[in-house]
Amino acid sequence: MPDIAFELLLLLFLAACFAGFVDSIAGGGGLITIPVLLIAGLPPLEAIATNKLQSQFASASATIAYARKGHINLRQQMPMAVMAMAGGAAGALLASIVPASMLAAAIPFLLIAIALFFAFKPNLADVDGHRRVTPFVFGLTVVPIVGLYDGVFGPGAGSFYMLGFVLLAGFGLLKATAHTKLINFGSNFGSFLVFAATGSILWKVGLMMGLGQFIGAQIGSGLAMKKGSKLIKPLLVISCLALATKLLADPSHPARLWLGW
Image (cartoon, rainbow, N blue to C red; front, side, top):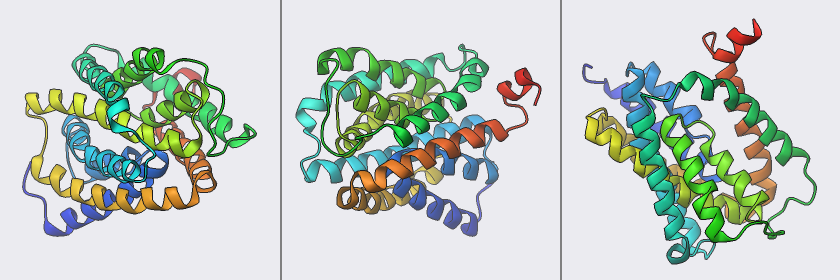
């Protein structure tokens, strides 16, 4: 594609800053960055691949911020990040084989269900709850499965990680948010390696947006640690519903075709 004008690069940078801010708190940064990349004229494959590059900066930035304040033990959680990376890489390899329409049809309704869960479940706070599975089992099942989905399709992966950490690992919302950023970084990095090998990434755009993501995530994670569940819960609900709405608004979305909308 031709060189992108400076004004458009500035718009992409500002969009990335805002995406990093939102993503560090509730996930869903791709809801902002992928449409902007498409509007900038990138073909869909290059937009997704470039998004995988720049989105790593948000998750890495937020992970660093949360780890500094003791919300993540990086040494203990690194095996989970590696499992997520393996899942993300496998998903990216399968992306051309798996019928994305099947995933696309179901995801909006799953996101709506997640939004309703976080909106109406009582006693959701920053205090840890009952743990239903061990970290070992969680790392061998939920983490690579969501990582695989992240590599194949992507939208809402952070919300699925959050749901798993809260429902199965028994984490409070702030702790779940912090750990989601680390695991999300793993699955993003795994799929990024595959896309980098195929030459689908626009490095200039991705790195410039990555800087914006890093800055936005530093601000967002700091605010999340100050406000806790009072900020995370409503923003997570809004993020899930916004992403579901965006997916269903696409006239070519499989669910619209199947339901006759």
